[in-house]
Image (cartoon, rainbow over all chains, first blue to last red; front, top):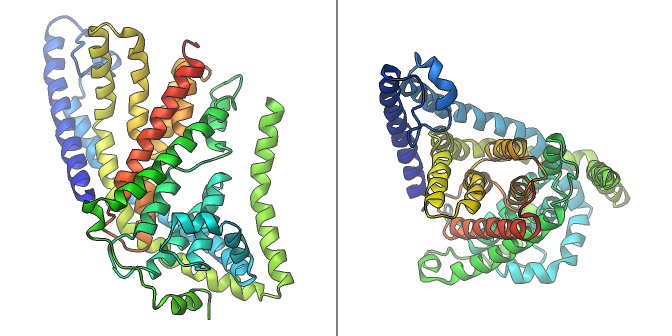
Length: 256
Length: 188
């Protein structure tokens, strides 16, 4: 699935960019020949009005530059993101280790055990993956993005310890990510700040609606991920869960 | 309301310091060797972050190239033209939100920019501004999250993860628009 999405995004992006800018270049030079400016062609509508004067630069050239820049920029950006992540990861995984050694994480996980057991039947009780997932979801709900990612990645590693396959996702991972990406957030700090910055008279007004909408998406996510896991297409390549080794893994990841 | 916002901000600003305090105090009570524990846990952070790089490059690369082609913006324009043609001009405005809905799962910074531009153009307290905020708040940057999380454990075959997440995103968007229509339609 991802292979196909990857291909189509690239193909459409490049071909569309090329086609559109080639079309605009042609219509622009046409229009410049006749009356000045009002070439409200179907596609040229967004920027054509202010660009018309500067018709010396061709859209074809600009879009080509834009696309190649986008490709290179994205590579730089990913490394920047990951470098930034190293420090944050180290900070929170360090704190998580203390909480883990103190038995605090296990206590938190025990509180939510019934829900976790239903959502992730393949993850055994008391497994550190359970605890890390609880921490991640809690951080997400509180809107602590910086803390949520390290906990989430830790959870993925613990889930991977239960996975018999090196490269195929388990049901537990799919469920965890479905819940994570449909995140319920109680305090959407960024959006409220953006609204206030845009001069809203009541920046927090859509909060109740947001909570309602996220609840809908979380419920749909859980239903969808559970239903899809049962379909023939996706259950065929489900990797086995390692159960015999669970206890060994557990003591390993708890740190001896 | 200003007071309420301030309280919210205060709570979210102090959550992290208090969580840290709680962890450290709990650890101290249980006589955990704090410094040693911290360092041994932190070590793992480096590996995970570095392992993600190839996955993230692969994903951000296609998303950025696609976004640079400005296809989403044109889909909106074509849709509005079509709606006006068939006499549903009243609803054509709503399509201003389409690029946001399509961009939201792909990039965080891109969708944030779209939210800001919608709010500055139509006003943050208009129907469009409020509904855009709802849409932004009810979904995540799905592709980014999935890439990072699976990248950390080197998983390449995601099975039903992506369809499930996209169904949930679509439901979140639909709910946001429905709530927007119910509560805010007609506001300038």
